[in-house]
Amino acid sequence: MLQIAICDDEQLYREKIRRLVEAYLINHDLTSEFHLFSSGEDFLRNYENTVKYDIVFMDISMDAMDGIRTAMQMRSFHSDTFLVLVTAFIDYVLEGYRVNATRYLLKSTLELSLTECMDAILRKMQTAQVCFPFSEGERSLYTDNILYVESRRHKSVFFYLGEKLETPEIYRKLDDIESALAGCGFLRIHKSFLVNMKHIRTIRNYRAFLDTGQELPVPRLKFQAVKEAFTTYKGAI
Image 1 (spheres, rainbow, N blue to C red):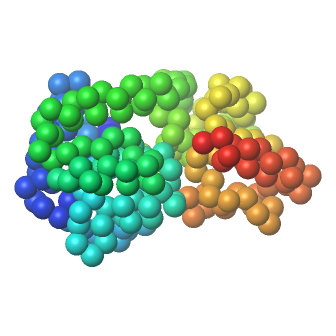
Image 2: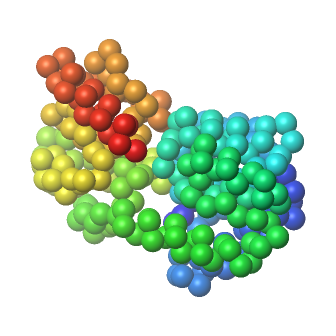
């Protein structure tokens, strides 16, 4: 189920975007849950809103806290949500580069442009999935939503961001999971922890600090190599 947020200070456009996106997803046999916000402050009020959504539609021209400032705060915690900027004015198009927007949509042409926007997002999502035979059955996961994988005796436990934090388990060594996720931006920071670098905010004091507020240990002997690998990754994106 896709988690989608729509942040716009005009109810007319909140409902219009929801209606258009919902119709698109139904046509593609996809389920979704929508969360509507009337201001940037409302969106940022709950910490989890900065990390929980697959797609965020953000109006640029809102009173008090505008969409760019709101998006910048969201990006400071989480870099991989698909962000779509929506506005009535073409003058703001360059602002999208500051917050790594996936698309920039004009309110006057939503009916025409939204389908192409969603097509592009789904193409990117579909290239970032991985399938594992979990204890409860085979399941595909979006790699962006995997926080980290922890080795516990003979099992590997996935910490996964969906509607809520899930912990599916698999009877497989962490070495095997690391191989399966090679090239997806995961870093072995500890013999027991494989972490998605997209969710690491910083590495310091022999700890990896995640964008969810969690902290994971980095052994002293691995610290320099782990920090260098993370620095290289950040410089490449």
